[in-house]
Picture: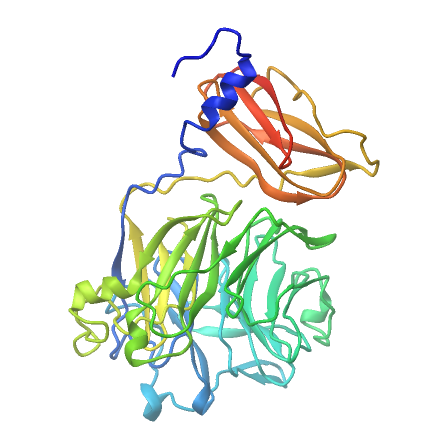
Length: 487
């Protein structure tokens, strides 16, 4: 395209913006996911019964949650150095005639709580396992994996909710659990680490340090937190949504509306399906979401996927079709021979939760296959900058004009601050382009901002030296400025 010499530099840049596809730090998934093992559905390596969640401690070392509501079965099964036929700790029965009706006990002295109707667990690298338990007190129970079993600690916390479902723990030990309250919208309760709150080992009646109320009714089946506790993601099965909140446990959280995810996949879905468990992959900053039907056998096995989402926007980046993998490996959706063959397909797709190890491998489970499955990516997963935690409101004054300031310092290496002003509530976007008009990264993606003055930090450590253009829009106006990175 030829441009008149009279066109301004800004006009040229803005023209190029609409000609070049977005790359956003090259969020490219050019490899494939493959299941390298699924624990066999047979002795001596089977979980032994319905398995709704897995918590990973390190590569090939994890804890499986076993739960069947119809006969009140609920327990934890540990694995170390696992593969499809090895790794399970201890001796357990099998199915209704073995494990049926067994409820593992959390105990500390004379204080005893039975595991009951737990659907999710969270494990930490230091071998602690947190259970969102549905005993009468709706306790968060804390266990620990020892050398040969999963044992009680002295820590538990009564939540007092009608019911609890999903749970996660950040790198500082703050605990996040979702509630399912009768005739009300669900909440996320945030509790202090057990090292900071004596109630965990005392009367067990501490109050949450922060509470988030989700705007839509429905069952909150997944919660995932970045390691710093700055961003929380929550899935709502009935509303088919995933929400994003930014803040911190002490000062609270606000919804980040620039993240927008609505589950719409209907490919191969015979029954109602929706978002289940969530997992945030540290360092890579990728949000994983399990999606499946709601406790359906038979043709329900034909569907089950894991979606990889952009943590800043909610855009779908990649998909793992677990049901299709089972079909290709076994020739059917529920035909794993004797529950053992092949060793890398669980069959009976019912993928409700996800977790990861330190090597960025993915673990999921099959509720009806009674397995834990490990998935490996054939390429190198991209790292996505988590930009949504960097926006700060600088003062309480209402500005008189929509404004974009010059970044400072400028030139810079590798970080710089960008300030802007919003005169009234608006959906704001802030994007960075290179000199040819190619999108480099989206700092803010159509997020709702109140009137005020704001600043955001750009970390350009992964960019090459050169001139960049940052563009601010509010739906009706568009402003831009140049900045220079010198390394």
